[in-house]
Image 1 (cartoon, rainbow, N blue to C red):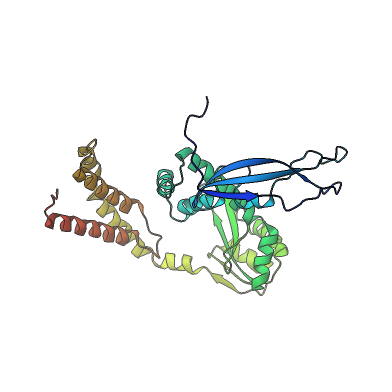
Image 2 (cartoon, one colour; image 1 turned 30 degrees about the vertical axis):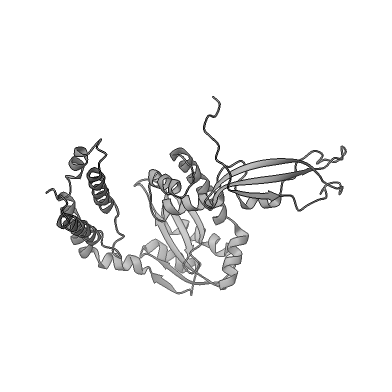
Length: 332
């Protein structure tokens, strides 16, 4: 079926041409053969790229008729994509740093003037994951980062999403925050960890100044075997989490009791379904604020989710009181 949606009018134009003017295979001059136009959605606005394409006209050249595109095209977007790198980076930040849902990400982009659908947001998230994987496995970039600091402090941890599945073991440099290695192991045996950590040690271009991990016995044994004489420390976060367990349990119980008091939000939302007045919009706004407060958990022990929920519900309650004092209606 033919596309019927109206194309957006570009607000920004860039004229790009290849810097290279000679053929790499035969050395002859590359002639400007034709021009392509490419339209991209970026955070700055709809961008039009006018691309001059060069080709070698030597019929005996292995690269004859092969198009040579402008080198600068690659800094705007991926090949055959309609959105710029800045949009992909924003989508990744909203998803993984701010934990926004796909509809929320789409709403944010539309608010910034980027016309996008929810399906496209999912595609952009896939591209972000692929670009991140490429960046993490770029040995040249990683070696340059580590060479600048002349040492690394290794953080070692194992992640097991589901019981019975493989454990994902990760080594991260605590100074730069870079992930140095990751592998899936069926067990956490000392022998397996020694083999893996020895490979990490040999691949590391700078000295290891220290190691941090949780208190797991097999990790301590493997570290002692692979990094003899290197200072070792139990992770402060794990230590603090264990020490704060009684406080965490009390906070979790308090949060559960607070949730019981706001279970009627859905019933209130049903009352204003289909209504378009200002009062209905206000009610929906307060209901959304309550739902957001319920789902925005903290990270114990550094952030108490029960105390955070109490503070947010208190702020919503105070806002309702102010609205009632101005002559509004407050429902029980």
